[in-house]
View 1 (tube, one colour):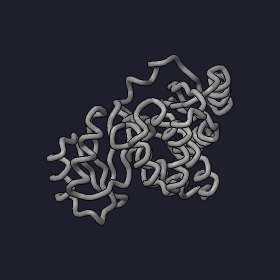
View 2: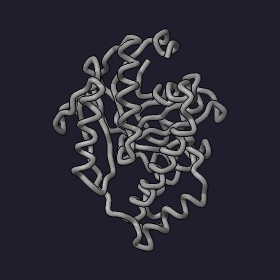
View 3: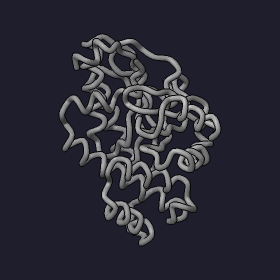
Length: 246
């Protein structure tokens, strides 16, 4: 079972929801502010902002927090953030991509490097693991919007590349440059999406046993605890039996 689509479920089982939600809200708000600052503050005229707001809403980010994040950009009060991607290897050679937004490059680079080394990983050069992932757009829906055939048909009509249905819901994949158009077309047929975002989708994976998964989770947790880190993606693969033991 592919790791990139299972990480949220693992976190849920770990029972760190309050802490995770607080961190998540902060990172979602930062993304909204940066998107609004880089383009038009109107989500209808700024695809990146539109996706950031949509993702915020899908994660129950309060409307007043969204509005404040946009106003912060309009008012010129927002910090200047650089978007930097780090790549490296976790325990057992798992590929790891770390996406950050930082107002201090030196601080972030030092922290990310230290976190890798303290948790059995190694920070590599840009491009060292990027070839193991493809940049894609991802749209998700709950099972209540329709059966697999209905959603597959809508995805094909919208110009998506792939659609999979599991017990967790419907997951639609498209080219990264088509995400805005595909999500808009899907919403016209299926309604509001649960999530719309750009992802790094593994094109090869590394199988982990229980011990390997526990080590990887420790690294990812430590990285995600850093306020400069927006998201962490890995290419782990684990059996249902291993995932059930976490």
